[in-house]
Picture (cartoon, rainbow, N blue to C red):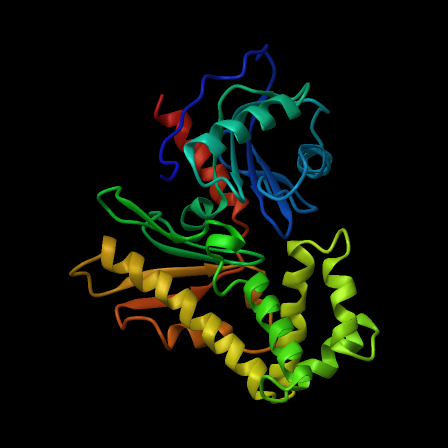
Length: 326
């Protein structure tokens, strides 16, 4: 079951000061914070470290959010503990109503002296369409450290594909690509698979002379999901060097992302001739057109656009919308 519309009671506190709007995209790769006034004008923004609800201890999760929020407040040149009329957080790893309630409680407590009168917590993929489209209709493909596909049609119906973490899904993500590259290099070393340039590139990356030595780094403490995802950049280097295995990994990643998009399209947009698809995430920051690879596997009704729009701006729009729906 996915979180749909969870409206917790407001956080109580005084509000006899100028109020602002807060939008936060707390992802597994980084945290983006945007502050606006009640007209929606952006006043300040900042970037911070990753804030994944699933994969980080509470202290680190909150510390990265607070640091980015503090930097955004400084950028906006407003008081240290402003009052926010509404705040919307899109958080990686919030996939169920229980997780949504837990994340809401964690964030509400972690904001400390910062007052938020209405606080909303969603999955980070739900910020993409409001940020990148005028009507919030279409399909969002958030492909970064993890992957998640989300769609919303004009009837207000929603659908998801994937997005349930690296054990259950995350196909096509940087983590998935990095893991496949590590496995391909290991098979190359053993002789169980075709020889690939990834073997040498990965050995150089870790400063070892054999893939068997890489195991030490993989299984040592601290080699987390983000560090596996970083290997996707090495795989991209392999593509740039013309390595077939590296190219095949990205091709399979494109097929997996396209499968999720096509599945959501079939659920929500039957009979429609053109379906907008907005793709965001760090996996698209490779030196070749990964988006075009995905487009090649999409149904002809889907038109994919890779966007660099800050999803935290979508959080601002959703927070502002909550004020008009009182």
